[in-house]
Length: 251
Ligand code: NAD
Image 1 (cartoon, rainbow, N blue to C red):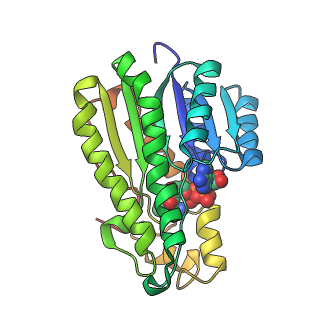
Image 2 (tube, rainbow, N blue to C red):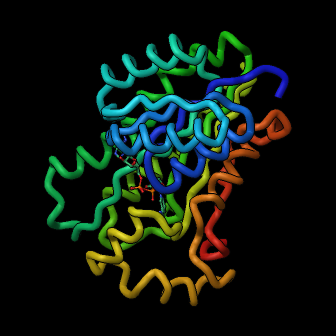
């Protein structure tokens, strides 16, 4: 990279977002970690700086709140400069029988997974337009390929993120900005282990790994590697795409 660029990673305090933050920092980006969990964001930033790379935590930010997102992005700009890479990773999973989903729960799942992606993207796009270069990667879900019982709210929100990705790619391609989505499948993170503990996976993570074509669960680093490529200069001809990283569980 000729000039240091700033990347925002939402949900960078845990799991996939943490791995993406580490990877982009080691690729040479100055990484801003936005997360609801302040302590987790601080920990990731400390780990990265201890490795000799650049990261700053912006914790206590709820991406479903536009005012909080705008205030955080203003701070990122003031601290690290214009934002040229955005990874919309923070997400909220849920498992509920369709007939039991309340309006509040539906709205919350939409607000975090879809609304958060909308707010963060609107907040940073002007920097990318100004620079005539930008990269956006939206972390959706492999459940958008297949559907998932008891996850109608979550899959609806993540599927909307796929549609948002495709349409944004068409609108902002002429401005030098690419927009792609990675739908992860079965990645061993605190989110997945929490679902396992609640008995929501119909078996253990290890049981599912045995049924996965590559015979293992995904690692957060698998998603980070794909993300690293998609935000690079050399991925400039890839936009509006769904790049599945799922061990062959969805083809
Ligand atoms: P995780 O729970 O380990 O990490 C999610 C992070 O997002 C946490 O640090 C959390 O504090 C943060 N976050 C949650 N709500 C937030 C909000 N409103 N504002 C700001 N930060 C918020 O989860 P993960 O498994 O690493 O998942 C990361 C993304 O990948 C999510 O969008 C998830 O839906 C998606 N995903 C994961 C899997 C998987 O197998 N783990 C599969 C498909 C999709």
